[in-house]
Length: 144
Image (cartoon, rainbow, N blue to C red; front, side):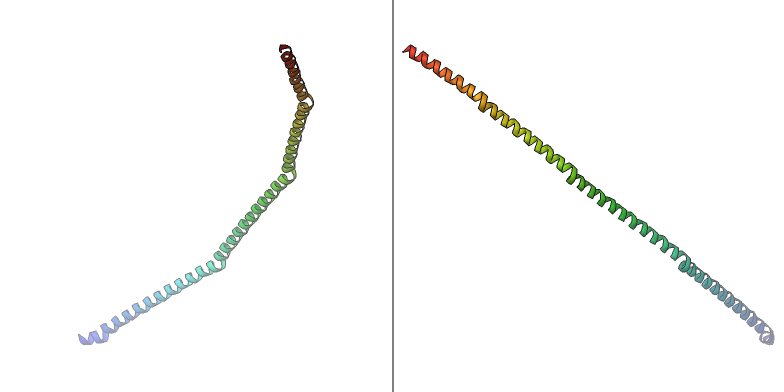
């Protein structure tokens, strides 16, 4: 039995075991090669295709955002300049003109009222007052 084991069964078992180990290591090496190949392909796809596309999209979005920001700033500055010009050269002169006209009319009305009082109403009032005084003094003299 020992002779059959040593010369027949053991060499067959070792051969089967060696074949199984060789096949397993071959399968593992093939799997490792496939995994490394897939990883390399994925890295290449990311590095040379997806990343440049993503960077290009990001750069384009930054350019568009910066352009929109610059345009908005230009519009805001333009509107501010237009509003300032409108105030300085249209609204302020109109307001100053209206204010000057109101002051001129007010001074004119005041001067006219003063002239009417000084030249007409005051002399009439003084005349009436003197007339009353004159009549009163005549009545007082007559009563004495």
